[in-house]
Amino acid sequence: MVMASGPILVPKLQIVGGNRLEGVTSVSGGKNTAVAIIPAALLSDEPCVIENLPDIEDVHVLMRILTFLGAQVELEDGTMRIDPRGVEGHRVPARLAQRMRASYYLVGALLGRLGRAEVPFPGGCMLGPRPIDQHVKGLRALSADVECHGDNVHAEADGLRGGDVFFDLVTVGGTINVMLAAARATGNTTIYNAAKEPHIVDLANFLNSMGARIKGAGTDIIRIRGVQRLRGCSYTVIPDQIETGTLMIAAVASHGDVTIRGCIPTHMDALTAKLLELGAHVDESDDYIRVRSNGAHRAINLKTQVYPGFPTDLQQPASTLLCTARGTSMVTENIFEQRFRHLEEIRRMGGNARVVDRVAIIEGVTGLFGSSVYITDLRAGAALVVAGLMAEGVTEIANVHYIDRGYERLEQKLRDLGAAIERVEVEDYSPMIEMVWK
Ligand code: EPU
Image (cartoon, rainbow, N blue to C red; front, side):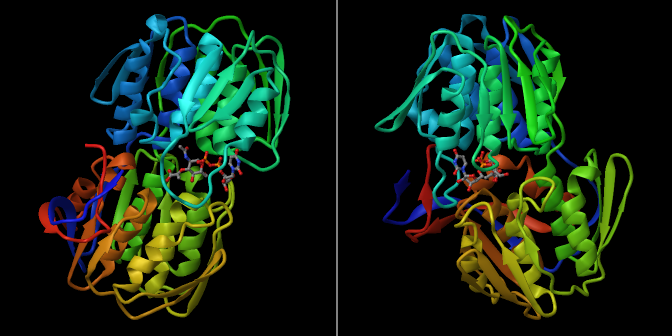
């Protein structure tokens, strides 16, 4: 990543705030599911077809990584066909690995397929320290030799053997990496204190569709009986829990009335409960949620937790919404210690929030005003879009590549619901503009 020093032409989102969002929208396939399932396809001995993939940068980067390693990959209209039979490479190039967090899933997947992997430390959002000690511990419990040299993770196994993995804390990435490595290991693996997020269950369903024997996904003990080979399959990834939540929050923030189709309402229970507490209306059926608000929002407290608690990925848009709720809200971030950087930007829009350790104390103001702001990570991007919808006047949002990493056509979906949001190219002199990769 390069910080620019002079004026440059950069893409920005421009939002004229105040429009009420109304109508019906639909949710795309899950990002965090997609980035686990695509590497998992490397474990198969036959081609796999994965449907309902979101058209986002992380999916495109993974496609390039798999191709680099020797797989044949085709992607059309959200359907990816992966033929992993030609995969011989075990080294993931840094220029690709460092563009996303999920590149660390290639350690588990390549270990399972080739018995060795060399993967540069992953990139992804800067949310404070993001160690991978639990991944390393889990893979070592499966008899892999794992070392971190310089900027690389080296892993090697002379035949992976199942084992017991006790995680010291609940880790989504660690749980996924061990599931990937264990699927074709010899013998049984048990993961204790496993993550229970919907995409853990989706990954288990995908692996089981290929012939794996995984039980207990969605609970905190996952049992995996290793199999010798995995076959090809066709699989449809679940809808994106966090995109659904972002759209729900945007609907409430604009005092709107929005129906989100193609979602899984039960995945949204923690957010739904908080939106009801704040004063919004939520109706749901099997596969849609309708969210309405008349604008009278009360301050609430929320704490991020592992699933089924309130997801950290929705904390940033939710804490933004609370900036105009009546009273004082307290938001505690228990998962990532530096996930409040969006609030610094929202202060420039008139928000009144201060952060003490892991708690944001938000004093509701009567309204936000448009300003020039900078995205610092993916969900901060969603938060600033929500702020722009709420604000009076024009908000100009820079570093939109973060949003492109994880949201499919967010601005188009919001525009279709009535938001005044455009992508424009403008000159910017600020050192906070990040030039990345492209
Ligand atoms: N942790 C450790 N050691 C480890 C692994 C994690 O200390 O070996 C700590 C982390 O530092 C963090 C906590 O454990 O404090 C939880 O981390 P986890 O491993 O669960 O998170 P992750 O796998 O790095 C995934 C998602 C994140 C999402 C979190 C929590 C992907 C690619 N990323 O990250 O998604 O916030 O789980 O649900 O699936 C996003 O989509 O914007 C995003 C950041």
